[in-house]
Figure 1 (spheres, one colour):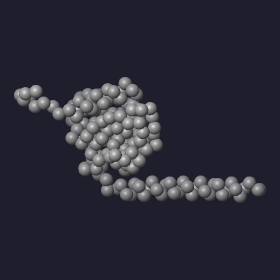
Figure 2 (cartoon, helix red, strand yellow; figure 1 turned 45 degrees about the horizontal axis):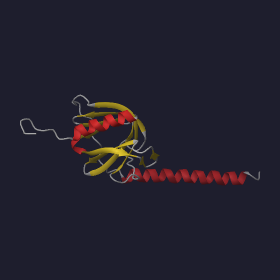
Figure 3 (cartoon, rainbow, N blue to C red; figure 1 turned 90 degrees about the vertical axis):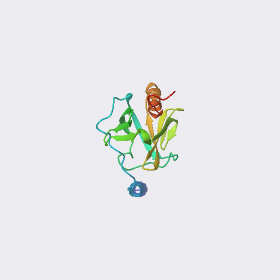
Figure 4 (cartoon, rainbow, N blue to C red; figure 1 turned 120 degrees about the vertical axis):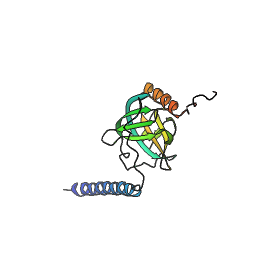
Length: 169
């Protein structure tokens, strides 16, 4: 009986903390409700330059690794399939609609060590720097080391402007 009151106080504090976390998440979703929805992949994509599987870690506002995007299926960590096409990058997140990042929207790709709540070995994350209707975003992916190098190489190929036919090189 003497332990019942402290246990009830601890339980009440935990319930209060969970309620506050839920309210904070819902406030964040509401504040991002106006964010545009990412495009679905077009039906006619050319053959992928690279395909692989990995872990989608998060998408944040560009340059702010702690400002998680919570809307349009981008809010939760998930297994994903990634495909780099000449037209852009397709992220197929488990449990969510696929996201298409057009080639013109991708500003760069590189390596990162941490994002929000995920810290890995140096350079263990891929960060895709892209723009969604003038909103700069960074998407973080975790792949095996050999897939990381291959995806970055394919993405660099996509980002390199093609030399027009007939022009001097």
